[in-house]
Amino acid sequence: MNKQTFGYALLILSFVMLNIVSCSKKDEITQPVPPVNNCAGTPGPLFSAVRTLMNQKCIGCHNASSASGGQNWTVDCNVVSNKARIKARAVDEGTMPPTGTLPQADKNTISTWINAGGRITD
Image 1 (cartoon, rainbow, N blue to C red):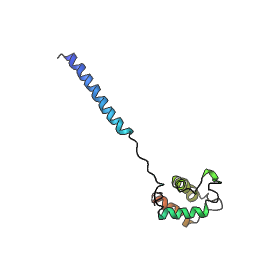
Image 2: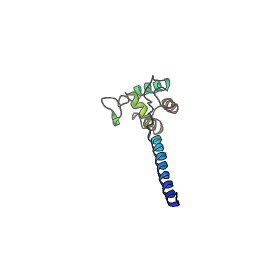
Image 3: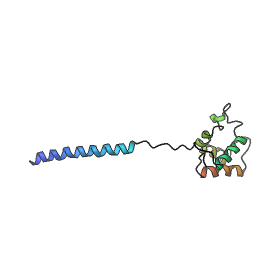
Image 4: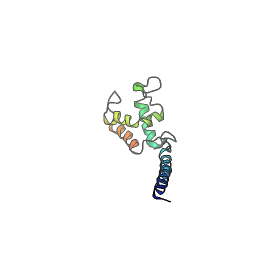
């Protein structure tokens, strides 16, 4: 085998190996990651405390029939999915509820739930 033929064979072999490695890496990268469902399960004590708080202070405006700001807090998964928004408005900014800032104990209830993971099972 002369040098030129050997060079072509080496080039073809390199190309084939690159494609094999590239395809196997691509398959590893594109595998979907199963979503974490933070809305499934039995409500835990921290979420239940937040649910009670929201029933008392929030769902008068944020319910299925009025959904102020486009938010319906009567649905548990909506609460879980929007925990950052709830914390920002009710705890950090103090702009919710519009009738006045929540007492510190209520802010702590929300923060404790979120710091524990903000799942329905917490």
